[in-house]
Length: 174
Image (cartoon, rainbow, N blue to C red):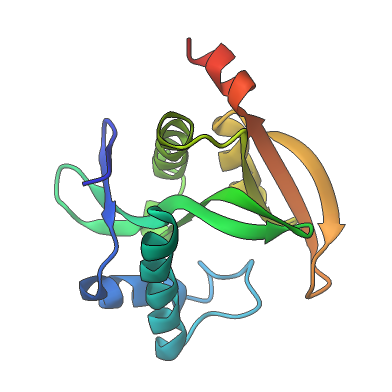
């Protein structure tokens, strides 16, 4: 276990999570803000990338499970991402659509922000998403992040960036 919240446990993702991950990443509705849903080889690449992040950085996207049942409902964590030309620590989150609109995303993301500022020396944490992704924007704001900018990414998608500084987080969490 990496993190625990009132309702969730965040733990490392493993190869055993493939089927649960596949349910999320291959679903067209869940992946509507991505270029396309993943196929099984894309799901495996995602897991491999996550495991590589653990080795390279000591952190990454973690499996989000319900504390009460242990059910895998998605991922949340911190990854190093290229955001407008810079490698920055990004809080990312993806939940099974059956668990949308229940506060799990913001609960997990807020815990990851806390972890990022208490276990790493990041001056700020970021979230970025395609601009039409209003649910993800709301999750970033619930974590205390503020809108920074929009830019066209490498795929010419309008991308929104949100940020919270260590100083702002510490003021809100004395």
